[in-house]
Length: 261
Image (cartoon, rainbow, N blue to C red; front, side):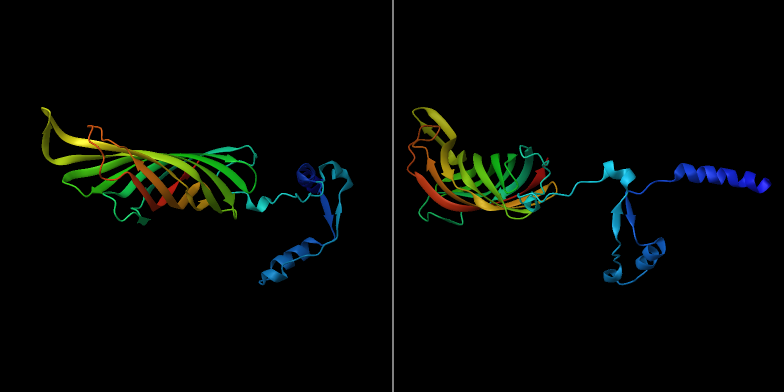
């Protein structure tokens, strides 16, 4: 009698925690344990005959359909699986001095440090559209009797992004940029009774960025080649005629590192 009293809670407990499997396998627990103990991973495979538990039929998953779309190239960029997903990125980077360009120019822009914000639209598994806005600054070199040359530059680019693998993409597109070169004259000058210490020359242009982007989770880094055509204003802010340089065609390189939200 005492033994029955002691066994009763065990019987009740075992009944409460019993579960019905979704599938019935022909292999036993000993088979599973013995297979799991093998040191060689290639030998840790069972070939059980599997039948579905009819009592759990409603939970039986349907056969997975192979989609015609290539989901293996879905970008690893923090965007959702929604084909209309919108992503946002903030990046910091640099643009090199001209690697290829005019040799007779009087105005040379040196290395630029910039920040860029991007809006990314996921079109499908292979294509994205990216709209970027950037703002940067750097030093300049002008072949004249001036000092403290610097420049401020902004730009907008519309890029097509072709996903090459889950983490690597090629980008190409077109954009517009503008800016201004600021400088001080070597010494103050006087013109019609007005003293002038500094001046500013504006410019604008077009470019066709092409490059590669590496995404890993939310982290992103990009490297672009920037073929550019810049047009300088005919006159400076102080009204002096620009006889330094009217047009500049050049090739610069851009590198960025940022975070995609």
